[in-house]
Image 1: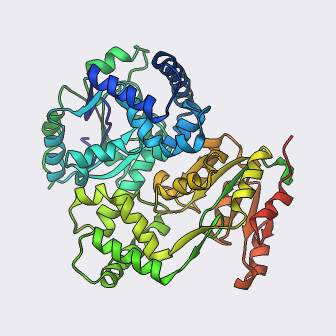
Image 2: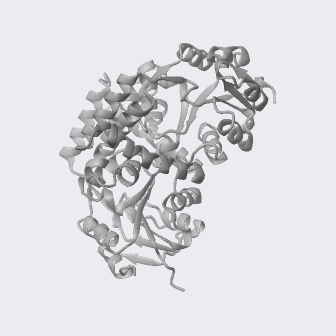
Image 3: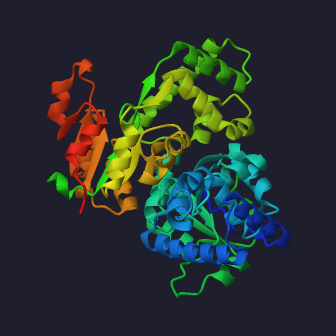
Length: 244
Length: 243
């Protein structure tokens, strides 16, 4: 039976947005981070240390399936030797600069039009994303003029729970008011995104084929089979007709 | 459960770590600025009362569903659905601050909060916050202002995690985040119903209520918790230094 999908949840990284590795942008972010904390360490020392701590944090969060808040991330994991009140106060900015050090995040060319059209077609839209930033995704929605299209935005940095813990998907359904069986999820990760939604009982899982994700994720043999694989976001308009 | 088994202490905020001063001039100014930020042409008091009707309806739903909205969704979908959504999203945090100023008045730290928190931290307890609130930023901003942000390992706000007290899930989440079993956690709050119900259901090892005897509810409060205190500094008698 084809599920009656009322609500569509999206992943963000490599699904609605992609990262452009622009060196000027990266250099500026790294300089901004160094200036913000007024470090006396060299660029290479500081970023090697942060990368090491970040990897350790990420490994832990993938095991516990929990994320900490921005303030806790920077004071307890990333910069514990710096003045905690200064670090806490600057945590949102530090997170933005840390993420910018990966490159500039931009919406896929067809993201805004596809979101607006699905909203117009009568679907309830939401976000479920693993992320350390609390502000960047809502700010992006406002900047691209799609904030009004999303009813519920669930970020691991706020709700603490991380994908693929089924609890984050159940929480999202509880907040948006749609039973799991009537929800679809659109993501790029062949393991995390598919495993979690299927365990939570989502009615449909759609994977967007993103070469960056497939290159970064080692094949584990645990890949799950989605209901649909799409090459671009606008393909969703063929899957989801206007609701009556 | 003996109190010496307690490893983590979670606090409520409103009427526990902070109290309110309902200064009429401060409240009126909050309401005036709220109407101004919303670009309302209405009288600020009329505008505030319109929002209060919406807020009261939201509060009823949130108390039943045991869920809160984050700031952006609250202001876009509930409080100001008739104002440009992108503008509301961009100013949601400021709207929340002004709403709280115009409703509750000034929030003041209890005279013994900072010293008690610092001392409990120094004694080796893991400290955290579990609070029902619509603000996402104000509580951590307050911790920073008071110089005690480093004392709190985990800050769980309903406006961020969505879950609301007394849902046991919010207490379980807090324990999972700070890595301490429920039986080894204490909770300090002021509400004899919500705070006690949730912590008991979640299996917390100790429930402490703080009360002003002038409110005349001492016996009810004493009957519903493990320890009743008047001042936060009394926690230092309950929780000795950890080895």
